[in-house]
Amino acid sequence: MKKIISSFSDVFSTTKWVASLYVRTNPVLASTYLIASSVISLGNLINAYIIARVTDEAIKIYMSGSVNVDSMVPILAMILGSSLFFGFTRIISRHAWRMLYFQDWMNLRKILYQRLLELGVSKLEKPEIANKTQRFSEEINNVTGYLEMSVGLVGNLVGFVGALVVLLRTIPAIIPFYSVVLIIELVADQKFIRKLWVLSRDTTEERRKFISTSSVLGESSYLKELMLSDGVGYLVKKFDEYKNWIVQETTNIRKQWNYWKIFGELLDASAFGFGLFLILKRLAARMISVGQLTFEIRSLRLFADSFSGVTGNFVSIRESAIKLSDIRELFTDYEPDIDGKKSIRAKVPEIKLKNLSFSYPDNEKMVLSNLNLIIKPGEKVAIVGENGAGKTTLVKLLSRFYRCTQGEILIDKLNINDLKIANWYSKLGVLFQDYNTYSHLTLKENIEIGRGTYSGSMEEIKQSLGRAGALDFVLDYPAQFDQVLSEKYKNGIRPSTGQWQKIAIARFFYRDAPVLILDEPTASIDAVAEAQIFDNIYKFIKNKTVIIISHRFSTVRNADRIIVLDKGKIVEQGTHEELLENNGKYANAFNLQAKGYV
Image (cartoon, rainbow, N blue to C red; front, side, top):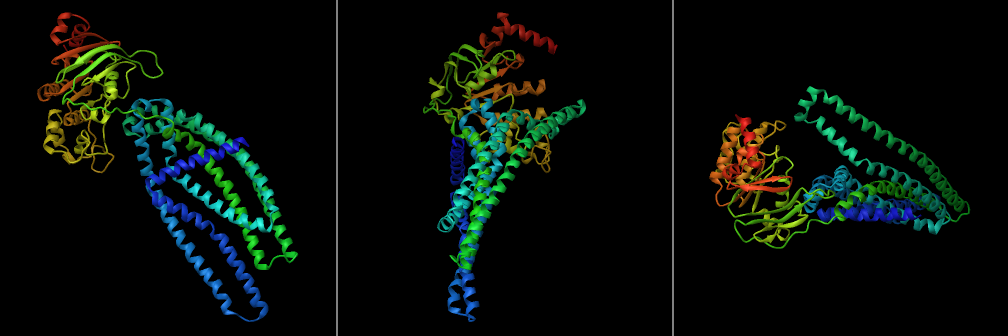
């Protein structure tokens, strides 16, 4: 019994949450759909009453042998009025439903990405949140279906209660019989719903891998290597292994559940038969008229159908609710990143690392250890080191994707955690080594997105492309600045990897923020183009702080200061010439790389 009560509680909470999603995005449509659908549910009972009146009146006319038109007018008016009223109500309900269904796939995705933005990058990288995000993405198309089932359940309850009132006055003995049937069906359904949910929950990561495998097999950029290495067959085998296993497990549970459903149908039929017997017994005792007979039979049928609808809808809702209640935690159980309240006053702020140490969540190993560093306003600083030295982690901390484990980062003498993040981001421009490619956008839009505004100055866009060494190949595009950057769209083209990186660098130039960070910005660009881009960085970026992250020491020699990281610690710093004279780690690495070029 406790499990049944818990089930009702889960369904209520989840239904309330789903309803709040729709009321927030489409309050008029959602309310209209709920009210109209509930009203329609009373239609069958009202029509049953009208038919009973018509039947009795028809028998009177037949028995008397004369037609009394006056007595028929009210009944005919009731039939016509009821037909028109419920017909119009159905049209309104269907319109509201179709518009909700049409809009929900857009609105629900907007709600999802808004929530993910609230949570922040650090939380999104946690496996449990990644799993819940995956499950919500899988269920997002079923949320409207859940709303439909919920409204259907409300409608069934309205019809159920209406018929219940009639039966309590006519054949109350049937109610305990149906109550026992209801409890038996709910207990069985609860058992198998939970089995399916546990299977779904415990296999989320495997399902994520399955979906990734599906995506890889359908992506042309992956197929080149896979076809040449016969990797397609390898992945198809993994695809089939999971598919066959999950289908078999689900089928076994569904089969067992269906056996119980057959037993439940027998119980339902027995209850209906018992109710029919009680009604006919009342007719034989001349306690009711023929019209009343039809009304009570229709009421019993409506009660039975509503009963089945309530239990069936509840089972479907419970099955969905147990999944949605899990992913609902994505919206209710995790605190969003707490924003600060302070703003930076300086146009180009000073950046100070003070005893900064950091380890990733659930990992005790320190990636950065006791860093102390001051970057002056307008200074061009390079941070170099081998892979794994902690360079990209430092970028994440400066971007406040993560917060320091120990120590602090001061921006304009303010702790970065106390800043309004929007204020800090307005001062910051970052080009990550895994830069974004917006292949569904035009070239112009790929640049404009760097400031988050439409209709940027074409002169500035051209200038940024020129400084990134991208203008020449852009002018060769058929549509030039309006070129869509994917061959999967009509008249689209696909830039090379090097071209994409130059487009990303152009977006970075266009950002034109007071503090600019470049994380391995030229990994896919040839040495000549790389040298030209860095010359442009030093030449055109004036009165701005520039932080260049690199493991290619040849690209940073003109920086005002070079910081050498090794195993999360600062081991050297100075100009290129000073570090060569020190003959330390930087000099050894620089000379080693220089030999490669020779």
